[in-house]
View 1 (cartoon, rainbow, N blue to C red):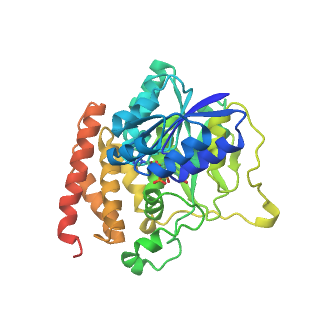
View 2 (cartoon, rainbow, N blue to C red):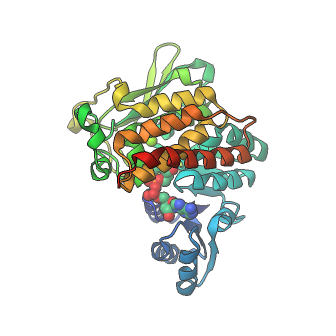
Amino acid sequence: MIRVALLGATGSIGASALAIAREFRDRIRLVSLAAGSKDEALVAAAEEFGVSRIALGDPAAASRARRSFRGEVGEGIPGVDALASDPEADVVVNALVGSAGLDATVTALRSGKRVALANKESVVVAGELLAALAERHGGRILPVDSEHGGLHQCLLERDPASVRRVILTASGGPFLRRDLATLGRATPEEVLRHPTWSMGARITVDSATLVNKGFEIIEARWLFGIEPARIEVLIHPQSIAHGLVEFIDGSVIAQLSCPDMRLPLLYALSFPERWESSLPRLDLARLGSLEFETPEPARSPGLALARRALERGGTTPAVLNAADEEAVRLFLQGSIGFTDLTRLVDEVLEEHVPAGPLSLESIAAADRWARARLADLAAPRARR
Ligand code: NAD
Ligand code: MG
């Protein structure tokens, strides 16, 4: 029986994690649950799974939960954090979104836990630090990103010196074939209509700008210790082949599965075992063909942004993440246009002077600076 703390239980990945816990009740026991502000959904999940410890990031939601829930209710970042070091939990599933997820990843690794990590932002901003923390305290990160879950399966037990390159696939998002001249007018509704994956709002917007794929380059850099020059991205509209590894002899191993986040979650929880599941099976004959193409730079500004952030290093990836998080928020509320989003992030990135050495404090400072700077730069463009 593995005992799991699930952070971000009310989100898209959270729902997948609950589904896996439901299917594998004999192997997974949820011991604590956290979310931001959806107290009703969180309490309902806690009751369904007999969980007695919950936390809500939003204090008002925590007060409401205290009236309806019999167990312990933590609040704010400290409340969520406390669950990440819960001695009752062997594994922390971090499905929080954005910068808010970093503290929990750090706390869980400091407690020597296995972290099934969906919150890629943690690795983007602090990859270097997390690897060291895992090493020092005996914890480990297993990725809950389909591409990295795939790469992990292809790379297993193989000597890193035998790898020539790794390939991450991207669906291309909703604007793969859209007339470039009209991209600036793309609305939040259009951006949120992802062709192959149903996900939370931020990652869906990041998939349209390819910032998400850029983040995944950074994620692969730190999770697998592969230099950026050997990490490639291919557009693959069907989202069936998730991660591919080319070895030095020319052989390529790929991981294929239906686009369903329950599988990378299940793999991160069951590893090194495999558990028989009822997840949708791949029918290649029915699919008929799998296509791959090189990303067009004009449709994938996020890739160049991420490569530049990695090159400059230090706090630059934290600036990329925070500026993007803020720009996505402004775009979704209708304050800036779709093409402004990455243009503004680019401007903030260009102004940043990386402060070394990398620490949780310098990351937090860079994060605050980037948000404020992005808001300043966006103000004159904000539509009224
Ligand atoms: P989501 O917006 O659907 O859910 C986010 C969850 O985090 C919710 O439960 C929300 O309540 C909680 N949360 C947000 N702010 C919080 C705070 N301050 N304190 C406590 N809880 C807070 O997001 P998602 O799509 O499930 O994505 C979660 C993470 O997984 C992201 O890092 C994303 O990049 C990554 N990811 C998602 C997918 C996917 O298919 N959705 C795929 C790969 C990676
Ligand atoms: Mg992914």
